[in-house]
Length: 449
Ligand SMILES: C[C@@H]1N[C@@H](c2nc3ccccc3[nH]2)[C@H](O)[C@@H]1O
Image (cartoon, rainbow, N blue to C red; front, side, top):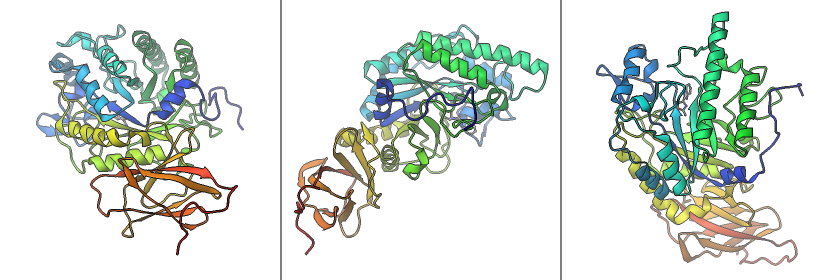
């Protein structure tokens, strides 16, 4: 291995209680809210082709004109309690909230810039009430923070001149000040979700970022920081020059999901997902495919089955309300979670051969395996292959406990579970309790004829 000062400081997963709680979340909510929510991807009557929260980067938009949106920020219908209640009903265990996106506008009254809610007609802090409302419902809060800040004149995409270096040193202090301010103002925040860290200017700050990460961890023991925050001294991001992940969980899964367990390298990770193809902030127009409840449930199942968390994005409207499409999805997901959440919470990779009918999730620390069924075979028989000398001791339908299945043993630790009906309206979950049967050779269930 290469000698590194600023690479990974820990190999393998964190085993402390804070991280074990994060690992068990399963389902999360992302909230992208800010000035970009006001134009919602439209400027001078034209629709921006990119993501709405990137509007300020459009050549048609002058920074000054964009920044004056601050004087229009007045979400009169904002109610942190109702957002948190929607999240509670949906069954999320954590929420990631934009404190400052790439445009530099702060949803908290930072004392290090004037470009905050404090100088908007709304005047009041947004982050504080949100943290309080979510904490009250037992939903942990992670603060999203963009290092890249298009408003701050000291921001640089790269450091080419002495002037760049002097300016960026000011920027680094500003960034440190804001992060320590956030941790001080919102001490119950469980972690930070960093973004906007891909430009050369920041990638060259291995030593600074490493010491800042250490400082934040010292200030808030147990703080959870993702792999996107910093680069090592050779400019390697997420995984250092020795291939070891930096940070506590892998943040590379933005709008994409790993295919197989090998893709996650034994690390914790979360997948952050948009409802349309690629819109995080509120956008008037949602082009292309809008994901349905069933699609999102399958993404959730896939993430949990591969040791990750699934975080669904909401882009609230400028008036502070949530759009109907998102409220409908929250309701649909919540109804399913109301019946099946035990297959999601405290779920982990089951280590079984993946079958076409769906996804296995093992309940951490137990012999319970959940079969999350999305694709019912025409045979109506769900194939289950367990590790050798492992038998099924109990099978039942999570949503319909009276519905018993007598698995048919079709080989060594191999079974068919015959479904009683052919059509299902929603994905459903069958629970397997397994037992080690290396002692007795007799099969528990009838052998194949
Ligand atoms: C979580 C997501 N990350 C931001 C983002 N900016 C990008 C620039 C290039 C490629 C991917 C990006 N994702 C998006 O604006 C959103 O906040």
